[in-house]
Image (cartoon, rainbow, N blue to C red; front, side, top):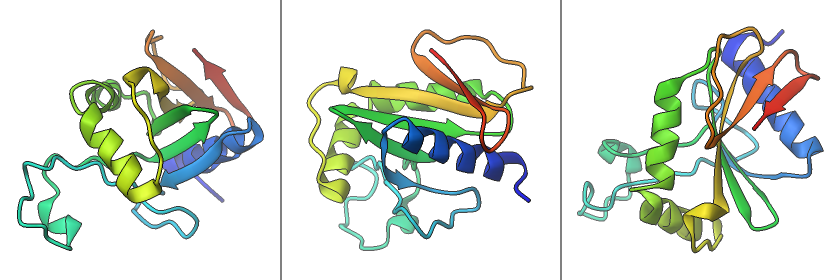
Length: 153
């Protein structure tokens, strides 16, 4: 039986797939995933030695919980059992000041080309009964069960 963040993650993957999104990258809680690779969004100024080991340089590296595409829109989703303002801030940073790093990661790791930040949408996934508030720039995925996800925009 799935609980907590695992349930949130599986439910949102199913919901997005049913909604015609193509899953590109992701990371289950605990870091293991047999279906998708991780998308490492790195700050190129941190690791200048061309190290083949990305874990050595984890400062300023962001790995979204889930990355999906539909038409020309990329969706980045962070998930927790409860609503997380800090995850919203991380996503805003990636879509804003770190957009060049996101663009580079998508191109180098997934072969996806994007040109403008408005091609990127951000979302938060969390439990249906978690207190939350609407954020104008975030899609909210409230998970009631594996089969029931409420999307708020």
